[in-house]
Length: 170
Figure 1 (cartoon, helix red, strand yellow):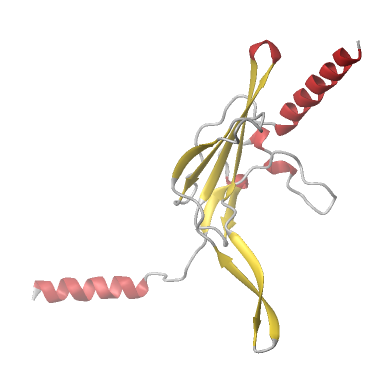
Figure 2: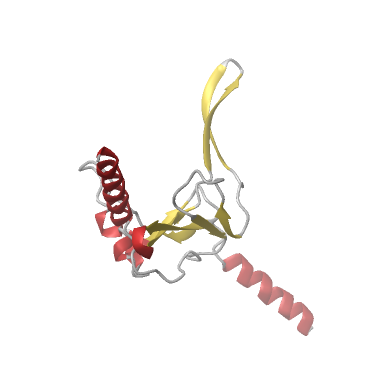
């Protein structure tokens, strides 16, 4: 009798549970403010990332969260670090031709593995980059580093290249 009672209770609980599919939630922060006055995301810049609710977004076209860490080594041993957080880019939009008609289709692809990997661009990239992917809500929340502003890094690149150009003119 107790086994039947237990099964009945479990079935009642399962029937009352919300079975609607919810999308994954990830932290999102932008490196640069979006261009144009139509966007109001300047409050979500990575330089201000603080794990608060304003950085949480729904990811309806992702099954993974992503964190991108990048480093830039400047002359005299200065190293700038940055972190970008977002939904993993898994959305694939395409057109399908069926019965003489083209129609838009969307798929969520699975190109990434859980974990972190360093990207080796065989010496072509000046910025070492590490991508981390995970599958649970808000899993891309690892601690931030001192400088997360891409603008800072781009400023250093411009100054470095300008100094290199000026030295080449001499």
